[in-house]
Image 1: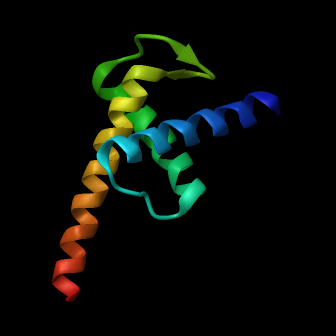
Image 2: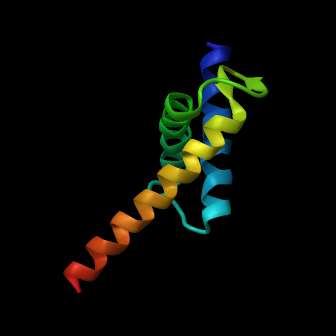
Length: 86
């Protein structure tokens, strides 16, 4: 149980840091950050592998890079949808 909570916290922090670096917020607040952290970690591990420091099952550097890519792509998609609805 504690490992799951720790993973949620680390995933949320990774998503939050990625949003701060990109300068965009993920919709959904804390839950959006957690999802961005988990999906970004998966994406980063898929692209870059599992290297660097590991915390709560996350290889931090690939997870952060993957989350940054995810936040950036989501912000571009959301911006495109806003332009088409205006």
